[in-house]
Length: 183
Image (cartoon, rainbow, N blue to C red; front, side, top):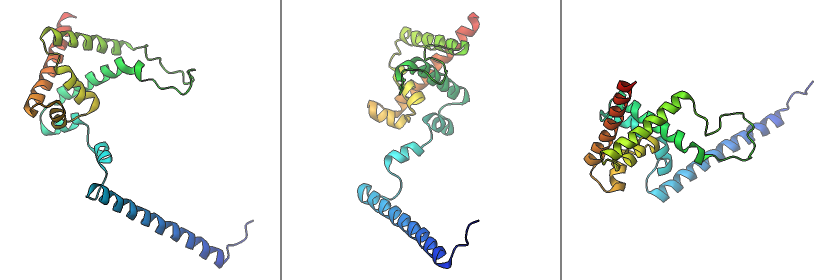
């Protein structure tokens, strides 16, 4: 059985919790002041703001640049890209596999179809001399880069970036249509 807390102990505990609360508030104020001094404006840092922004696909969908089917295509492209590059991005703390998960080289039947579709899409882009479309589509689908940022970094007009993105998606749907007709 524990002995009841004395008034002195209760007051000390309350004082410690109040001291922690005040220190936390001071730390938050100091962090905000440092952020304002560094960036010149209150609010989150640029890195935090980037993390809080919605994905580029969601933004394009909300603005009506792409429709639901095109957003699905971008998602499929991103999944295929991740499947292809999965083996190169493995970081293990131990060389032994403990979790019993799939190896990066193993693929499910749906994933294999997706990889074949991705390869056919790349071939279609090459056949039509549209290789410059692929990095733009991958930047939007995989990296989540907005069309504005994409146009700025690639030194092109925003309309050109949008046109190239839509050409890549049209090519993806053409390959899907042909593959469906062939089967």
